[in-house]
Image (cartoon, rainbow, N blue to C red; front, side, top):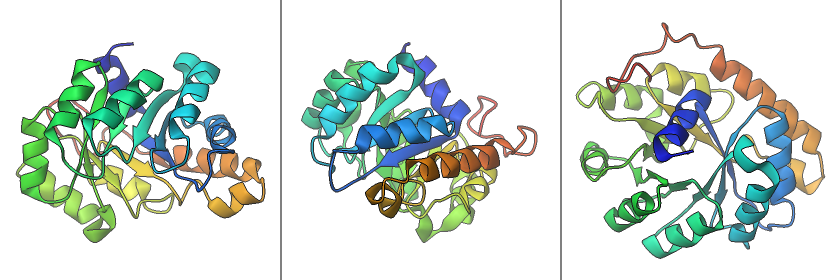
Length: 226
């Protein structure tokens, strides 16, 4: 699939599951568990040891059934390595123009991290496909709505402090998607091998987010999606 098709997959999913663990040993098992719960957009953070191996293994395991990404990407060199390993979208905690350019050079989706209105508009002007608002807990859903009032064209991904309990609130506020890590991928559950619990929680999350009807969600960005 091309970049626009993959972008639409994220917009349709509304959820990016973030796998951030102390060890890569169980990363792929975690990805399988949350996929079984209905999550089909999964990000492996580069702060997890051997993250590139997890991306490569998952790319071969899932094929086109799961859209894979790399997170905590701080520079274009890391972005390129992740894309070559199989990542189709690149997420950063900060804003780096060269990383956005590298993503587009290889046909990957660029999701830089921002917080302020100036950073958000700068990311959009630099060609970001989606813009991560991090940490979203700082302003909550109201902050997303406030940003979109003067900047309705941008597509925001609320991340940091987002979980199953408030994900729908961020979507209702206008977020194009939400990024959820520890609130979905519990380290305790992983450590205890309770992968069925991860599947259950993923299913509950996806049901809650997709229960929001399109005509209820705030229409943003001129594309008929939030």
